[in-house]
Length: 359
Image (cartoon, rainbow, N blue to C red):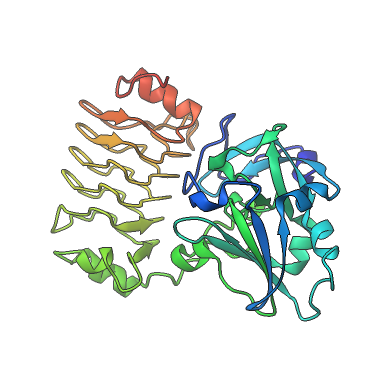
């Protein structure tokens, strides 16, 4: 059982409780790994394969129940999530030949379209790591990692990898997918709010140059894929081009920005703040808006459709002065097929008439 269940206050800073289990990231693995009979966990020492474990072999190990609170880096937390599986310590210490002597880190890789991976210290893997195959007494749902995933209860949930297919013993650490592409924190401890370690991810000079661009094509299609801006200061920004489609602008401050009529379809704006921003007539369909703060924004005629909205905020019931923070205006705004929207935000958007109740 996770240690945080014993805390008098079980909600880490910056989080909000939900009874839902939002799907974050990909919603399905690569199809060839969905069959438990075909699933294998490949074991490597550096780049050398040293073994593999099948699904039935994992089920034959001593299983335990893990009841823990999940804390997603986007800002939602879910109480008393019940998993069933095997401690990584049980699995690793039972390997033929044991753990290689020079191992200091363990890397996990997933069967996903973006080849997600993550790494932890060996000490954390042995102390806090799990390989789980059931949630609430049933096999994991495909969107939550079936047939097998890792869980690290003491870390933000991005350190818990869905659809795990390989385990690699390493002498030196390798940054995981989210750490190297977006500057997520290597440790990810919720009680320390270690969400991003990206102070140097985007320089002030690059951000200032970005603000002046009239065309953003080089940021959409770089040599290694879309280029990410993290912690950008876009306060008061009035972009020369309204075509911001597909840009990756994470944890950015758009306070007071003039974004009227911008095309942000397919963009990734996670964790960004839009207080007093003018988003009237903006197109936000298919944009990733997880953890975004829209309180205080003007969103008349703004279209949100098929957006990732877990922990996104359009209102807050308790601000610093105990005055609720809400949208500044919303006439003609539409929210269609939201994904991951939390209960309080859903109720607010229905109340102001910009979306229909979810089925």
